Length: 251
Image 1 (spheres, rainbow, N blue to C red):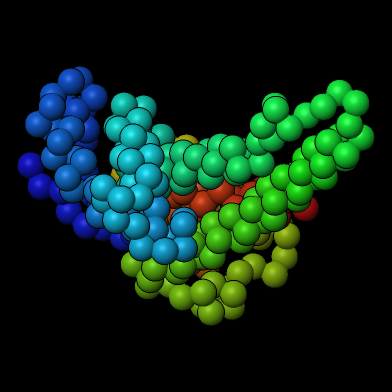
Image 2: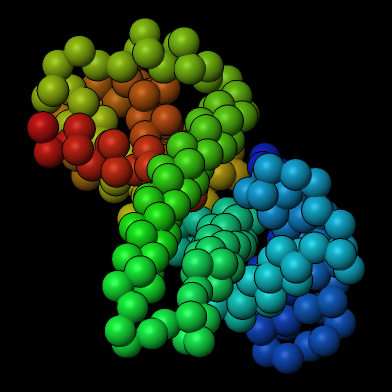
């Protein structure tokens, strides 16, 4: 059974995942061995420094997250296993960071005195500092996630011979045209067979969808690159881009 590199992550045979989920230790060990460098890169990028196995607790958290991802991933849900692993690892690292920050700001009970105004003021000040630290952390994390999304998105577009500059030029000017493109991308994203065709042949299944939409194939072909770009946002792990797209579709 071969695990191949594809795009940002690794391409995993569905039968290997199924065997691991069903308790096959060798399959699970093969997945963990193949994905360990990948999750170390994710964890290192999250922490802003290179992490070492056996030394940094974040690696243990990432490995636990990988095991969780193996158990909970469901094929055909619109995201690759690599993308799903990326999300689970980041979420668990964020949880770990928040717990660590909470422990940092904990105040020993022995420091409190019922009749001490100073103790109350210190506790209140530390609570304010904690909330401010959490707010800054969330902003930094969101900014980092957006940058990572854009980098991954750029690489993914390149696999379909699309650049960000081209995407800007080919984006429809009229809202009605954008909505038609969004409708086409959404239709494909909601059909696992159409998504499979798109991933396999690196092209839109125009023949399969042209009769299901209230506009012509010529319209689909004219906005092909834009529809491809929208579809990638729908079927890959791009929560920030997806939120932006949602706002555009409701405008």
